[in-house]
Amino acid sequence: MGEKIAEGGFDLSDRQRYRRKLQECLTGLERLLADKRFDRPRNLVGLEIELNLAGADGMPRMMNAEVLERIASRDFQTELGMFNLEVNIAPHRLGGRVFDQLAEELRTGLAYAHRKAQEVDAGIVMIGILPTLSQDDLVSGNLSDVDRYRLLNDEIVTARGEDFTLDIEGVERLSCTASSIVPEAACTSVQLHLQVTPERFADVWNAAQAVAAVQIAVGANAPFLFGRELWRESRPPLFTQATDTRPPELQAQGVRPRTWFGERWISSAYELFEENVRYFPALLPICDDEEPLRVIDEGGVPSLQELALHNGTVYRWNRPVYGVVDGVPHLRVENRVLPAGPTIDDVLANAAFYYGLVRALAEEPRPVWKRLSFEDAAANFDAACRYGIDAELRWPRPGRGGGVTTVPAVKLVRDELLPLAAAGLDAWGVERSDRKRYLGIVEERCKRRVNGASWQVETFHRALEAGLGREAALAATTRQYCRLMRQGNPVHTWPVGFPGHPEAHLEG
Image 1 (cartoon, rainbow, N blue to C red):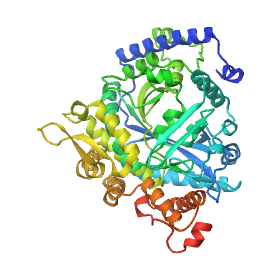
Image 2 (cartoon, rainbow, N blue to C red; image 1 turned 180 degrees about the vertical axis):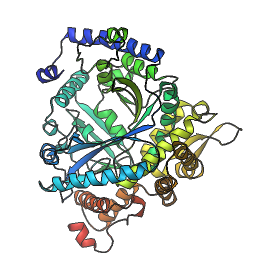
Image 3 (cartoon, rainbow, N blue to C red; image 1 turned 30 degrees about the vertical axis):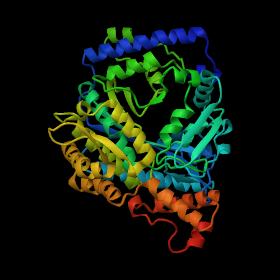
Image 4 (spheres, rainbow, N blue to C red; image 1 turned 120 degrees about the vertical axis):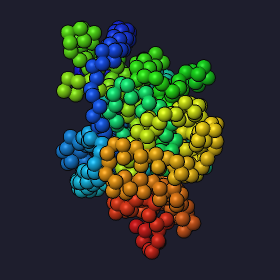
């Protein structure tokens, strides 16, 4: 695989062989599921956070290789853009004081990484999209110096056959083109993993899809791109357009984008893997020597490498993951909905809300996906991305009367979903103090109608009112964001604007 990536380029035989291997992998997955070969319930969760590098001036720094060399930890890895890093937290059992444990690990790891970044005049920033990024920053020359990223870029560009169009109409409109996929690197996310048994997978995935909109409503943190105020969570439209292999003609024919919400509720994990293979051509048709069906015949467990690689190039907001640990296969739901930040406490509040809510909804006797159309769930996701904390969502009415109503997201969360999330965390065995602390942060955001996006927008407009130009206002907002992020108090407590010393904060 490494040699093929290094040499680059694929011929017809590579693609034909890869298609055959994908079908063999699907058959292998089907057999493993039928034979009940998967890991027992272990209640394991994992966490990945994509990060930005920015200097004390709030501007991006294109130096992830230098920073990673200084960090020298396997927990930190490259991401697509030279201004990106990713931190990976080892799996934890969901229960007890898990969120406080995760908080302590993240504080230690990110503080160390920030100190190392400062040695080269950079710093770690957790935010959905860095407000100071410009079009000139998101060019192919700033792609991380890693062969697989360059090859992925080349294959997506070739598949599209023309420049990418970025056209997002929100509070303001952004319309421009890009010649590479690097604008995708602006999107920095939190990925929440939950290992589940095959029997529970569909219920958990359906529940995760149903709550994606409320995750965004309470957690939005990406209102700016290239100096424009767009959606409250601009990552999804940007990610969709920056990886879109479809020229306008294929879009008009209804060909599905590689970044998508999906189009239906499911009844098994297999359906998602099969759908990915059926709908999406291979971008990286790299085959290994494993014969998955022979491995199963001989009593072994195949890695299904081709299926895993293909799955990684279809950007579902809730992605199915197949993995093998210590010779035992498992399935995970990877939730990719949330932006990074603003603080560690905010990230873990979002995580607690998600894990509690999917547990409760997956076990309801009248599941929400039996009462809410998938079209409504998709429309909810779109509305939440556009309007954030002020979104109104479609949701089944409580009780047995049936029907669906439109309700403000903050009311839905406070009245119905936070109690469900609390019950779900209790079912996981999470300590009461952890549950109260982190769900309390979500509740306070709803009470005050504040999240990362609303704070950024309000502070930016205060800077404009103080007489700064747009670029200076965005830089001042970013510097203030970084200062408050490092203090660590949840975003709903942050003072808006630049209180106390406006000149110092605006100009410093």
